[in-house]
Amino acid sequence: MPAPRMKDIILSMIGSWVANSFVRKYGKVSSIKLDTEQKNLTVTAELLGELSPLTIVLKYKSYRRNGQMLVEITYVESSREWIKLVANDYLNTNKAPIEVPGGLAAAAFRFLGI
Image 1 (cartoon, rainbow, N blue to C red):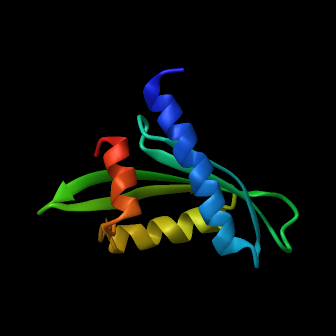
Image 2: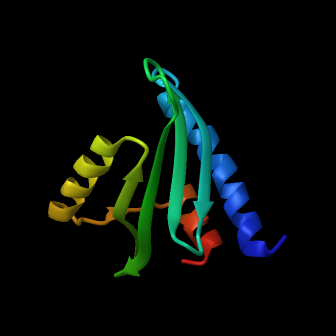
């Protein structure tokens, strides 16, 4: 398996574990798939009260500015049309990048070669 693909698998597994610690009250994240070559993150969740799993695909770009690591979500796809519409409307008016904090998050970005 090529190194970039293995890196995506490892980070996806870690992401699933972390995400489930946050959403346990609402259901569970059944999978996270990171594709650093295509720059997208796919999350599938089984949420309480939902009849079918929710899938969200985040397209992103990552970069450094003034030594700070930043991530900007550029587009959202979803298995729920209303989520896609609301998210992309929000992104059209709020293009602020997300600052990646130091420590483990920064180490993960170094691992990704960003």
